[in-house]
Length: 261
Ligand code: DGL
View 1: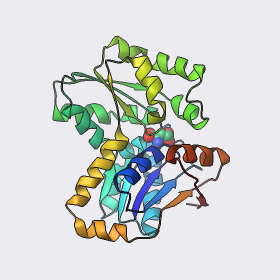
View 2: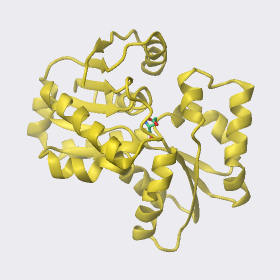
View 3: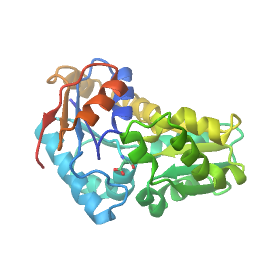
């Protein structure tokens, strides 16, 4: 099966696209809801959690693991690569490659958690590939709790999104990367507030596409994934709110299994 983990609910936006792109491959999802959010924790703590999350998924039979959390991708991907000898995917490289493949994009905005923005990973990756690009980042710590409350369409949320995006709007960015797995759930509001001219890009589809390309070159692994155990959804803390949002993201009934890490 394909293992996917996140600090909580946001990674389900990635799981949804992976399930759409590879409908014949079961997915084992882990949301570390007991320890969420990762976005305001130190890189050391996030790395420790990410290693435990990956160990859990491997114990369930995952043959490929997707780190569906920007904060964990920024803080822990390197350590995960050194610790585990399996195909590992993160959510930052695919979106960086997508934005750089688009025409007429010179000024790039990035929004994410405090930890992701503080890591400077998007600036580094973009400038390594194209030093001519300008990158402007903004941490938006209030957006994750708003999404978790299900406040996607509240006037208060629109006001906060507008305030966060002001500095990026003033800088006239051509593209805006949603550098947090929760933010695709706010894509419409973000698009409205940043303006129609700006390409708003999230990682979920780009990650799913990179997984598809990877498996196209590895038919044996693809066959093994197809014949693995059915999909499952694990959380480290079961809450009604998680079940409600998970159902609305995946558009179907979900059954959550509690696990202690
Ligand atoms: N999943 C995290 C990310 O993509 C956001 C939630 C959190 O802070 O844990 O950065």
